[in-house]
Length: 253
Image (cartoon, rainbow, N blue to C red; front, side):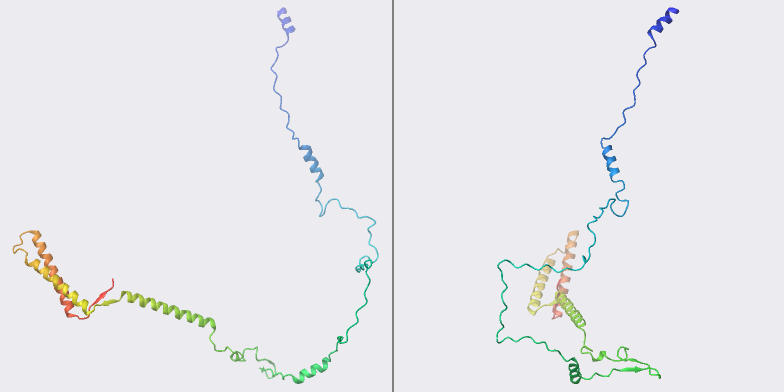
């Protein structure tokens, strides 16, 4: 037992597996640049103006008469240029003489030659003499004196003309439509030709009816006989109607 413990003490405890450590924290390479920009613009707009204002120079003080308007500097004469003397006016030159007008005389002449003012119409409504102008009150018939009083306005005349034109166009379209649908009158020649054709058809149908056998013992013979009888009756009716009436009308379908 002592030997086993000595061997264990000499060799030591068994090695334990190394535990993985935490990864290094990520640090951006722009962090320093962002920090400097933030410190630079930290209090840039805390006031209404910029943080740093240029201090005026002591040499730029307000001098005496500096705000008074100054005349433009005179142009220096060019070298070698001389002023020419003024030209002498001609004999026909007449200077402009400004004559002062006599406004008092002018006003007097205007009053003498002017038309007298017409008296204004007043209306007195109380016994104390209270009065007011009659024209703006609405009691004065000033509208009947207008040049266009009682004249139909242009827009009313234009509207009436348009309505009349539209009515005429409508009536013309109705008449045209009625003419299209109107019945046509047969002439005497057409009536005679139709009557001859109907009589000729009647003779042909009658000849076919006469050639039928006397005994109709089959269904086909009965149907043929009834059909010929109906045709004869219709032809006789048409012939009688055309012979009875001289004026025959045909509708346009």
